[in-house]
Image 1 (cartoon, one colour):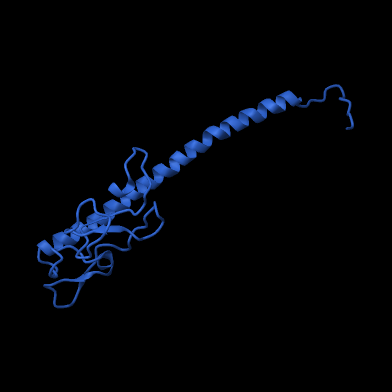
Image 2 (image 1 turned 180 degrees about the vertical axis):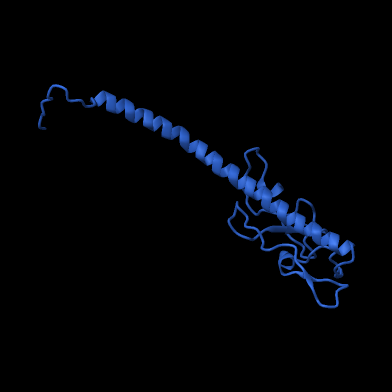
Length: 158
């Protein structure tokens, strides 16, 4: 190794100073990673709550429209939609001779936990804790993720 002599007034870092600076940077990085993971999970949970609220509101609006007599009730559905696609495609108004449709969703929201638009569904006839869909109607929806939330509950139970 070639030794370079320092000239008077030259400044530089010693090996100890470099090690201390590197250690401080490593500690700060180590503290930032868990905070970033926490923030990502919190944001996904917020998106999941919003998507569930949006879908459940559309299902409730559909049910309210059937109760008000605006749309026809198909036999066996108890006034709930047959699937989520109907909420997006729209349903013809029963009292309107022009064939006007009422839509309840612009698009099916993305499930932030599974990154798909494939939601778990329950019909009114299904058991409330069931993870299978009887296909009679869509009474409730849930995420198909098996992960647990920060509070320990499963996302599918939200």
